[in-house]
Image 1 (spheres, rainbow, N blue to C red):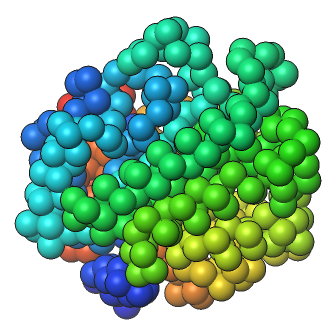
Image 2 (image 1 turned 180 degrees about the horizontal axis):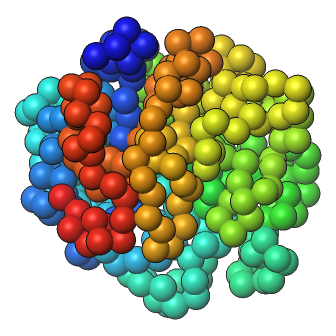
Length: 364
C-alpha cells in the first residue's frame, strides 16, 4: 500500500463515532425488502461489505412512519415491530464483523407517483402540493401535518438508537421531501416554512432539532444534501459561497454533526475561482466534518444501463490529504463488489468487479 493510500485507511473519530477508516458505503435504494421488511439477505448484504473494510455503512433509504413516505412496497420501512426487528438483525450482523452502520431516514414527498404502493389511495405530498414544473397534485401541507411528519422523523431516530445503530442520516437531497422545502420550485409557501433560502430551511431545522432531542447530544446525526435534483441535474440551491453559508448555517446550528454533500462527480468544483467541491466548501463554511461522494472509483457517472470501468482514485486521495473533506462515500463500485475496499487496501485493483448491467443482476 502506498503512503498516499494510507490516508484513506486512517481512523476517523467524531464524538462517539469511531471509524477504522475513511470509507463509507453510500446509500443505494435496492427495493429488496418485501412488504417493507428487511430480510436475512439484507443483513448478509451489509455484513459482507462491513467485513471487507468499509468503515461506515449508510443503509439504503428507509421510510419513516407516514403513509406517503414510500412509492414502492419493497423499499424498507423504518417503523413497525417486524421491520424494526429486521433492522436489529442487520445491525447485529454488521457489528458482528466490527462494522458501523447508520440508517438513512427518508420521505419521498412529491416524487411519489399517484397510486403508488404500499398505500395506493394516499396522495403524494409536498410543501405546496406542486411538482417542480408547477403541476398541482395535492393540497399544500398544513402546519399540523408538518408537525406530524417532524414527529415521525424523531420517532425513527429514537428507534435507530434503541435498536443499536451507530447514528442516523437524514435524506435532505435529490428533490425528496426535505429538499422540496429547500427548493424554490417546489416551495411557494409564504408562512414560516417558506420565503427566502433561509426560511425554506425551517422544516429541516425542525426535523434535525426533533431528532436531536430524541437521541441526545452524543448520537451522530448525518445530513445529506445536494444542489442537483432528480431530472434537474444543473439546479443549485446556492449559487455562491455566501448563499451556501446562509443555507448551511441553520442546519449546522440545529444539530448536524456531519454533512454528506451529494454530487455526481466528486472532482468538479462547486463554484468558480476555487477547486473545492461541495464537500470542501461545506467543511470550510461550517467547520463540520464532511463526506464527499460522486463516481468514486469509476470512470463515468450513473445512467440507466451504463457500464463503468474501474478508475484510479489518485485525485481523490490528493484532496483527502489536503483535508478538503473527511470521509469518502463509495456507491456503485461497492454495490457490485462487496470486497472493493479490501481489494484496494491489498493493492488488488485488477480484481475489482466492473460496474455493468450484468453485474447488477447478480448483486451479492
